[in-house]
Length: 444
Image 1 (cartoon, rainbow, N blue to C red):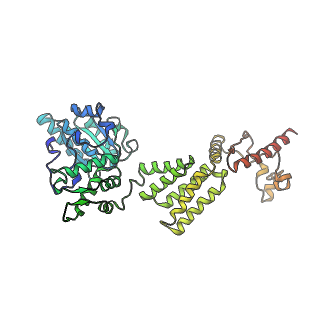
Image 2: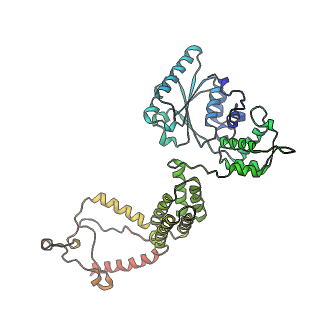
Image 3: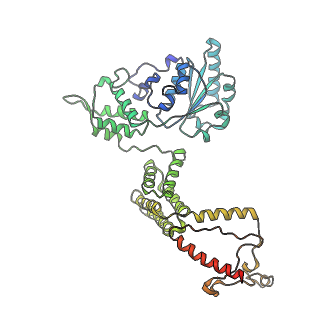
């Protein structure tokens, strides 16, 4: 495909989003952190210098268009493949086409692979020899973190550029351009548009230019011809934009980023931030049972004995959701999240368990002290199992002062160190009294 064919003439049967695809860098919307004046990528495109790269960003931010513009500026043959449908056979065909273009007229070839993260390691490795010998310049597009989804050998040969979601201002400007463009857009319809309607469409698009233009095209089709001008009203925009969900990829990086944000907001004692991220995940389609499980984990990791009610309350919220379902049960999860965010914080048990696990690995299979062993048989009693065990309830204050419960040969440990917050203030005071008794017993 020649560079001139990359942006075909307007065709009314093509979707508006495809017709409005930018044909020059001046028409490109957003990404000023990459394409602003003096930026390295801008200079590279303007100079026609090809280099392999990975474009990482949300849907509708211009990854495919940018690849086309790079090919156009370099007068390169543009070959587009989708990792959803392409295989090794398609890559070999692209390589042959690239060799043919080079042999005929010395033209370079840019191979654009959409959704590169869907290729497995062996498929991605197929590109490497052809990047090394210059047969192909590779441009991959992905919505997933390349660190996890692209093999290191390919990453080392391609520079990663991170594209950002488009702002409401970016999208509003794009929609106005589409409404006024008589060649490729909707200018021939001569629509009047309420500002509030345009802003709503831009908001509902959630940073996605393709989604914004698709909604605008649908809204334009709903405008009824009246006695006067054709008008795209807020009511029409609401009808088109209703029911849209924010971006959320179950199992993708956005999923883990958002659950991380929820957990950190709870840990940071910010009920508003925690509630926002909970609602973002519910809005995006995250299963509430998954959220219930993670909320219980937060209670035991970050609050625990500082406020034991937090642990029971989260379990009750989980059970309430299972009984009520959506949407009624989601309020129980919200209540639990807000409670956790407001509760006193302690990770003392979490830290203590980690240190104890380290000692388990470090000291190996130490013997259980004889006095701590159970002795259900005569033989075991004869061997000394349970001998000299001090039954705590028979001791003053139900505490066997001076008794040791760690294995022999292991140093004393104090894994659990209560924090000075919530109930752990009282727990720390009680432990201090008991440990003082241990110390006095050892000195006597």
